[in-house]
Length: 338
Image (tube, rainbow, N blue to C red; front, side, top):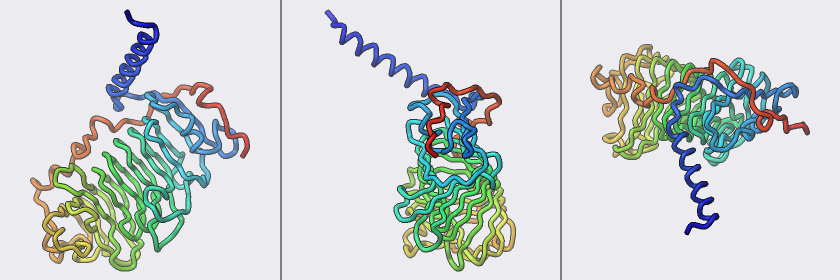
Protein backbone atom coordinates (compact mmCIF):
# COMPACT_ATOMS: atom_id res chain seq x y z
CA UNK A 1 0.00 0.00 0.00
CA UNK A 2 1.39 3.43 -1.05
CA UNK A 3 2.01 5.98 1.68
CA UNK A 4 0.75 9.55 1.46
CA UNK A 5 4.33 10.77 1.12
CA UNK A 6 4.94 8.48 -1.83
CA UNK A 7 1.72 9.65 -3.54
CA UNK A 8 2.64 13.29 -2.96
CA UNK A 9 6.16 12.83 -4.33
CA UNK A 10 4.79 11.01 -7.37
CA UNK A 11 2.32 13.85 -7.98
CA UNK A 12 5.06 16.49 -7.76
CA UNK A 13 7.29 14.53 -10.14
CA UNK A 14 4.45 14.11 -12.62
CA UNK A 15 3.57 17.81 -12.46
CA UNK A 16 7.20 18.86 -13.05
CA UNK A 17 7.44 16.48 -16.00
CA UNK A 18 4.26 17.91 -17.55
CA UNK A 19 5.56 21.46 -17.09
CA UNK A 20 8.86 20.54 -18.75
CA UNK A 21 7.05 18.94 -21.69
CA UNK A 22 4.81 22.01 -22.00
CA UNK A 23 7.83 24.33 -22.16
CA UNK A 24 9.53 22.08 -24.69
CA UNK A 25 6.46 22.25 -26.94
CA UNK A 26 6.27 26.05 -26.92
CA UNK A 27 6.50 27.57 -30.39
CA UNK A 28 8.21 30.96 -30.06
CA UNK A 29 7.05 32.03 -33.53
CA UNK A 30 3.42 31.90 -32.37
CA UNK A 31 3.95 33.86 -29.14
CA UNK A 32 2.63 37.40 -29.68
CA UNK A 33 1.46 38.64 -26.26
CA UNK A 34 4.03 39.67 -23.65
CA UNK A 35 4.14 40.68 -20.01
CA UNK A 36 5.43 44.26 -19.86
CA UNK A 37 8.08 45.42 -17.38
CA UNK A 38 9.35 49.01 -17.53
CA UNK A 39 12.85 50.14 -16.52
CA UNK A 40 13.22 53.87 -15.92
CA UNK A 41 16.06 55.55 -14.03
CA UNK A 42 13.73 58.36 -12.96
CA UNK A 43 11.71 55.91 -10.87
CA UNK A 44 8.56 56.11 -13.00
CA UNK A 45 8.84 52.51 -14.16
CA UNK A 46 8.76 49.17 -12.39
CA UNK A 47 12.53 49.17 -11.81
CA UNK A 48 15.43 51.58 -12.01
CA UNK A 49 17.98 48.90 -12.92
CA UNK A 50 17.91 46.46 -15.81
CA UNK A 51 19.29 43.57 -13.75
CA UNK A 52 16.54 44.02 -11.16
CA UNK A 53 13.92 43.66 -13.90
CA UNK A 54 15.59 40.48 -15.19
CA UNK A 55 15.83 39.10 -11.64
CA UNK A 56 12.08 39.59 -11.23
CA UNK A 57 11.26 37.19 -14.08
CA UNK A 58 10.31 33.78 -12.60
CA UNK A 59 12.66 30.85 -13.02
CA UNK A 60 11.66 28.45 -15.80
CA UNK A 61 9.57 31.22 -17.32
CA UNK A 62 7.27 30.10 -20.16
CA UNK A 63 5.70 33.43 -21.14
CA UNK A 64 7.06 36.24 -23.27
CA UNK A 65 8.44 39.00 -21.06
CA UNK A 66 9.13 42.38 -22.67
CA UNK A 67 11.46 44.57 -20.63
CA UNK A 68 11.19 48.09 -22.00
CA UNK A 69 14.21 50.21 -21.05
CA UNK A 70 13.73 53.97 -21.14
CA UNK A 71 16.62 56.08 -22.53
CA UNK A 72 19.59 56.53 -20.24
CA UNK A 73 23.11 55.36 -19.46
CA UNK A 74 22.90 52.16 -17.41
CA UNK A 75 26.22 51.39 -15.70
CA UNK A 76 25.53 47.74 -15.02
CA UNK A 77 27.03 44.33 -15.66
CA UNK A 78 24.05 42.33 -16.89
CA UNK A 79 23.42 38.57 -16.82
CA UNK A 80 20.33 36.83 -18.23
CA UNK A 81 20.38 33.50 -16.32
CA UNK A 82 19.93 30.18 -18.07
CA UNK A 83 16.60 29.53 -16.30
CA UNK A 84 14.93 32.71 -17.66
CA UNK A 85 14.03 32.16 -21.33
CA UNK A 86 11.67 34.20 -23.54
CA UNK A 87 12.89 37.64 -22.44
CA UNK A 88 13.01 40.60 -24.82
CA UNK A 89 15.09 43.57 -23.68
CA UNK A 90 14.32 46.65 -25.75
CA UNK A 91 15.36 50.26 -25.75
CA UNK A 92 13.40 53.01 -27.48
CA UNK A 93 16.22 54.00 -29.81
CA UNK A 94 19.66 52.46 -30.20
CA UNK A 95 21.83 55.43 -29.27
CA UNK A 96 19.62 56.52 -26.38
CA UNK A 97 19.69 53.32 -24.32
CA UNK A 98 23.29 52.56 -23.34
CA UNK A 99 24.44 49.64 -21.19
CA UNK A 100 28.07 50.21 -20.21
CA UNK A 101 30.75 48.53 -18.11
CA UNK A 102 34.53 48.67 -17.87
CA UNK A 103 36.29 45.34 -17.35
CA UNK A 104 38.82 43.07 -19.02
CA UNK A 105 40.57 39.73 -18.75
CA UNK A 106 38.48 36.57 -18.50
CA UNK A 107 36.17 36.54 -21.53
CA UNK A 108 33.47 34.62 -19.66
CA UNK A 109 33.45 36.72 -16.49
CA UNK A 110 34.11 40.29 -17.64
CA UNK A 111 31.45 40.96 -20.36
CA UNK A 112 29.19 43.95 -19.95
CA UNK A 113 26.19 41.85 -21.02
CA UNK A 114 25.91 38.05 -20.81
CA UNK A 115 23.04 35.98 -22.23
CA UNK A 116 22.85 32.42 -20.88
CA UNK A 117 19.12 31.86 -21.45
CA UNK A 118 17.49 30.56 -24.61
CA UNK A 119 15.01 32.53 -26.73
CA UNK A 120 16.40 35.94 -25.83
CA UNK A 121 15.85 39.03 -27.98
CA UNK A 122 17.72 42.33 -27.74
CA UNK A 123 16.43 45.43 -29.56
CA UNK A 124 17.59 49.04 -29.90
CA UNK A 125 20.43 48.81 -27.37
CA UNK A 126 23.99 50.06 -27.19
CA UNK A 127 26.15 47.54 -25.31
CA UNK A 128 29.69 48.67 -24.66
CA UNK A 129 32.83 47.80 -22.75
CA UNK A 130 34.85 50.96 -22.24
CA UNK A 131 38.10 49.28 -21.10
CA UNK A 132 39.84 50.25 -24.35
CA UNK A 133 42.63 48.60 -26.31
CA UNK A 134 45.30 46.22 -25.06
CA UNK A 135 43.37 43.35 -23.45
CA UNK A 136 40.35 41.12 -23.93
CA UNK A 137 37.30 43.24 -23.14
CA UNK A 138 33.99 41.63 -24.11
CA UNK A 139 30.94 43.83 -24.53
CA UNK A 140 28.40 41.08 -25.31
CA UNK A 141 28.62 37.34 -24.58
CA UNK A 142 25.91 35.13 -26.09
CA UNK A 143 25.95 31.58 -24.73
CA UNK A 144 22.23 30.77 -24.95
CA UNK A 145 20.52 29.02 -27.84
CA UNK A 146 18.09 30.84 -30.14
CA UNK A 147 19.09 34.45 -29.47
CA UNK A 148 18.40 37.39 -31.76
CA UNK A 149 19.59 41.00 -31.79
CA UNK A 150 18.07 43.82 -33.85
CA UNK A 151 19.38 47.36 -34.34
CA UNK A 152 21.96 47.05 -31.58
CA UNK A 153 25.40 48.70 -31.28
CA UNK A 154 28.05 46.42 -29.76
CA UNK A 155 31.25 48.30 -28.94
CA UNK A 156 34.70 47.47 -27.59
CA UNK A 157 38.19 46.71 -28.92
CA UNK A 158 39.36 43.11 -28.45
CA UNK A 159 36.75 40.27 -28.43
CA UNK A 160 33.86 42.73 -28.59
CA UNK A 161 31.22 40.07 -29.36
CA UNK A 162 31.81 36.66 -27.81
CA UNK A 163 29.39 34.72 -30.00
CA UNK A 164 30.04 31.71 -27.84
CA UNK A 165 27.61 28.87 -28.47
CA UNK A 166 24.09 28.25 -29.78
CA UNK A 167 22.15 29.53 -32.79
CA UNK A 168 22.02 33.29 -33.17
CA UNK A 169 20.68 35.96 -35.51
CA UNK A 170 21.91 39.56 -35.78
CA UNK A 171 20.14 42.06 -38.01
CA UNK A 172 20.94 45.74 -38.65
CA UNK A 173 23.54 45.73 -35.89
CA UNK A 174 26.72 47.82 -35.68
CA UNK A 175 29.71 45.90 -34.28
CA UNK A 176 33.02 47.64 -33.60
CA UNK A 177 36.45 46.48 -32.44
CA UNK A 178 40.08 45.93 -33.40
CA UNK A 179 41.15 42.33 -32.66
CA UNK A 180 39.05 39.16 -33.13
CA UNK A 181 36.07 41.32 -32.38
CA UNK A 182 33.52 38.73 -33.46
CA UNK A 183 34.64 35.45 -31.93
CA UNK A 184 33.29 32.14 -30.63
CA UNK A 185 31.78 28.87 -31.81
CA UNK A 186 28.13 29.71 -32.40
CA UNK A 187 26.14 29.09 -35.57
CA UNK A 188 25.23 32.66 -36.46
CA UNK A 189 23.73 34.65 -39.30
CA UNK A 190 24.60 38.35 -39.49
CA UNK A 191 22.23 40.14 -41.87
CA UNK A 192 22.66 43.75 -42.98
CA UNK A 193 25.13 44.45 -40.18
CA UNK A 194 27.86 47.10 -40.19
CA UNK A 195 31.28 45.87 -39.05
CA UNK A 196 33.74 48.65 -38.21
CA UNK A 197 37.39 47.80 -37.59
CA UNK A 198 39.51 49.96 -35.29
CA UNK A 199 42.62 47.96 -36.23
CA UNK A 200 45.72 49.90 -37.16
CA UNK A 201 47.31 46.94 -38.96
CA UNK A 202 46.38 43.27 -39.22
CA UNK A 203 43.66 42.93 -36.58
CA UNK A 204 41.12 40.26 -37.51
CA UNK A 205 37.41 40.94 -37.65
CA UNK A 206 36.46 37.30 -36.92
CA UNK A 207 37.96 34.46 -34.89
CA UNK A 208 35.53 31.58 -35.32
CA UNK A 209 36.18 28.58 -33.05
CA UNK A 210 34.70 25.53 -34.81
CA UNK A 211 36.89 22.66 -33.59
CA UNK A 212 35.53 19.64 -35.44
CA UNK A 213 34.01 18.90 -38.86
CA UNK A 214 31.05 17.41 -36.97
CA UNK A 215 30.10 20.81 -35.53
CA UNK A 216 27.36 22.61 -37.44
CA UNK A 217 28.68 26.04 -36.50
CA UNK A 218 30.12 29.04 -38.27
CA UNK A 219 29.49 32.71 -39.06
CA UNK A 220 27.71 33.93 -42.19
CA UNK A 221 27.63 37.63 -43.06
CA UNK A 222 24.86 38.38 -45.54
CA UNK A 223 24.40 41.81 -47.10
CA UNK A 224 26.73 43.45 -44.59
CA UNK A 225 29.13 46.41 -44.77
CA UNK A 226 32.75 46.59 -43.60
CA UNK A 227 34.52 49.86 -42.83
CA UNK A 228 37.52 50.76 -40.69
CA UNK A 229 40.17 53.25 -39.67
CA UNK A 230 43.17 51.65 -41.39
CA UNK A 231 43.64 47.97 -42.36
CA UNK A 232 42.31 44.63 -41.14
CA UNK A 233 41.84 40.95 -41.97
CA UNK A 234 38.50 39.23 -42.47
CA UNK A 235 39.43 36.55 -39.98
CA UNK A 236 41.73 33.96 -38.49
CA UNK A 237 41.03 30.47 -37.09
CA UNK A 238 40.52 30.27 -33.33
CA UNK A 239 39.50 26.64 -33.91
CA UNK A 240 41.10 24.30 -36.43
CA UNK A 241 37.84 23.98 -38.41
CA UNK A 242 36.94 27.66 -38.27
CA UNK A 243 34.17 28.51 -40.77
CA UNK A 244 33.22 32.00 -42.00
CA UNK A 245 31.42 33.10 -45.17
CA UNK A 246 30.84 36.64 -46.45
CA UNK A 247 28.12 37.03 -49.10
CA UNK A 248 26.75 40.15 -50.84
CA UNK A 249 28.89 42.22 -48.47
CA UNK A 250 30.48 45.60 -49.22
CA UNK A 251 34.14 45.63 -48.21
CA UNK A 252 35.94 48.97 -48.11
CA UNK A 253 39.68 49.21 -48.75
CA UNK A 254 40.26 48.52 -45.04
CA UNK A 255 40.39 44.80 -45.91
CA UNK A 256 43.91 43.64 -46.70
CA UNK A 257 44.32 41.87 -50.08
CA UNK A 258 45.15 38.49 -48.51
CA UNK A 259 41.91 38.56 -46.55
CA UNK A 260 42.69 35.81 -44.06
CA UNK A 261 45.47 34.59 -41.76
CA UNK A 262 46.23 31.10 -40.39
CA UNK A 263 47.24 32.43 -36.93
CA UNK A 264 50.75 31.01 -37.30
CA UNK A 265 49.57 27.42 -37.81
CA UNK A 266 49.76 26.30 -41.43
CA UNK A 267 47.95 23.03 -40.62
CA UNK A 268 44.74 25.06 -40.22
CA UNK A 269 44.90 26.08 -43.87
CA UNK A 270 43.53 22.69 -44.91
CA UNK A 271 40.81 22.47 -42.24
CA UNK A 272 39.46 26.05 -42.03
CA UNK A 273 36.69 27.07 -44.42
CA UNK A 274 36.72 30.71 -45.45
CA UNK A 275 34.51 31.77 -48.33
CA UNK A 276 33.32 34.82 -50.21
CA UNK A 277 30.35 35.14 -52.60
CA UNK A 278 29.37 38.14 -54.73
CA UNK A 279 30.91 40.73 -52.43
CA UNK A 280 31.67 44.26 -53.64
CA UNK A 281 33.96 47.19 -52.93
CA UNK A 282 37.74 47.70 -53.15
CA UNK A 283 38.39 45.25 -50.32
CA UNK A 284 36.42 42.43 -51.95
CA UNK A 285 38.84 41.67 -54.81
CA UNK A 286 39.71 37.96 -54.59
CA UNK A 287 42.74 37.77 -56.91
CA UNK A 288 45.23 38.23 -54.04
CA UNK A 289 43.40 36.26 -51.37
CA UNK A 290 45.27 33.44 -49.59
CA UNK A 291 45.11 30.33 -51.78
CA UNK A 292 43.32 28.31 -49.12
CA UNK A 293 40.24 30.57 -49.07
CA UNK A 294 37.31 30.03 -51.43
CA UNK A 295 35.65 32.19 -54.05
CA UNK A 296 32.32 30.40 -53.87
CA UNK A 297 30.04 29.26 -56.67
CA UNK A 298 26.28 29.62 -56.26
CA UNK A 299 26.05 25.94 -55.42
CA UNK A 300 28.72 26.26 -52.72
CA UNK A 301 27.23 29.45 -51.32
CA UNK A 302 23.60 28.32 -51.29
CA UNK A 303 23.63 26.57 -47.87
CA UNK A 304 24.92 29.76 -46.26
CA UNK A 305 22.28 32.08 -47.76
CA UNK A 306 19.25 30.79 -45.89
CA UNK A 307 17.74 30.81 -42.41
CA UNK A 308 18.13 27.02 -42.45
CA UNK A 309 21.72 27.61 -41.41
CA UNK A 310 20.44 28.44 -37.91
CA UNK A 311 17.01 26.71 -38.16
CA UNK A 312 15.68 30.25 -37.88
CA UNK A 313 12.18 29.60 -39.14
CA UNK A 314 11.46 27.47 -36.07
CA UNK A 315 12.40 30.04 -33.42
CA UNK A 316 12.86 33.62 -34.69
CA UNK A 317 9.76 35.33 -33.36
CA UNK A 318 8.06 38.58 -34.35
CA UNK A 319 7.87 41.52 -31.98
CA UNK A 320 4.90 41.25 -29.61
CA UNK A 321 1.66 42.68 -30.96
CA UNK A 322 -0.02 43.07 -27.56
CA UNK A 323 1.01 43.47 -23.95
CA UNK A 324 -0.49 42.62 -20.59
CA UNK A 325 0.34 43.97 -17.18
CA UNK A 326 2.79 41.87 -15.24
CA UNK A 327 1.58 40.61 -11.86
CA UNK A 328 2.62 42.56 -8.77
CA UNK A 329 5.20 39.91 -7.86
CA UNK A 330 7.09 40.81 -11.06
CA UNK A 331 6.31 44.48 -11.62
CA UNK A 332 6.71 45.67 -8.04
CA UNK A 333 9.55 48.19 -7.84
CA UNK A 334 12.03 46.68 -5.41
CA UNK A 335 14.80 49.17 -6.12
CA UNK A 336 13.77 51.98 -3.80
CA UNK A 337 17.22 52.68 -2.43
CA UNK A 338 18.66 54.36 -5.53
